[in-house]
Amino acid sequence: MNTIGGYVSLARPVNMLICGLSVLCGGIIGDRPLTVLTGFLAALENDPSHLPLRLASAVVSAMLILAAGNVLNDIRDVAADRINAPHRPLPSCAVTRTGAKVYYSLLTLCGLVAALSLGVYGAATALFAALLLAAYDVRLKGVPLAGNLAVALLGGLAFVYGGIAGDCAGRALIPASFAALFHLGREIVKDAADIRGDSSSGIKTAATVWGANTAGRIAAAVFAALAVAVMLPSVAGYFGVVYTIYIAILVCPIILYAAASSLGNPDEAALRRVSTLLKIDMPVGIFAVLVGFQGW
Image (cartoon, rainbow, N blue to C red):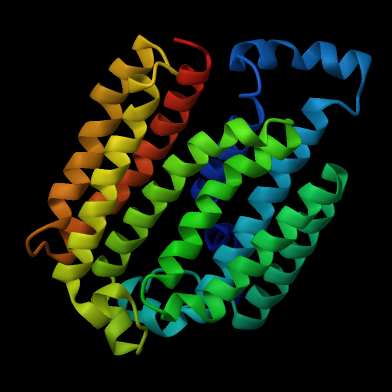
């Protein structure tokens, strides 16, 4: 039996919101973000085809395509989720498999249609993201590190996608690189937390193939690289003092905690806590980027 709550849960609205914020961030850093935001109303009055509508289309498109990928992921992972997450809509029978497949198709179609207003580059990026998400769910997720790298690429691509809408794709590469490292580390941690269910379902991840300890060391190395990367704009004088303080207090401690927690032999519950903490820290990191590009 299908339920509205089940469909909402399949789409993972929190992930959709974070994706939308990432696209928005990538689209407003062509100038000082506050300058861009305050210019939205004027742009809408003088030229409805200008940045606000383009960026809104990019945000909506990205959120729908990500939601579609989340749905397909749950469709493919029913067996593992019966162990790792039995409360999810498909293993708990809140949504039928047929209903989920139709939902996936509709979300993908709507996401791609919304991207048409972004021109050739925007539409091509949206199509690439949809295909990569499908490839991840169908094939890459079962290849150690390949699936993690695909998710990392998609995480960074959200900022570039916003940059395409806002005509500042080059500047968006800075937060895109941060996001790629962040998602790579977090995905490896999530794999280590899901090792029991993935092993029983025959899913090959870095944790199931090489062991949780090795996966943890790889994740720790990625987080260490991320901690260095987020400080580089400050060292280079590209971002200001406020960004440096903000990063030092609210971002780097979480990253380093995740690195330390990934080492040794943490249990599944500890790894899930790290994964949740990292998700909470995502909007904090996005705001840090806006602070940096504001010149603070």
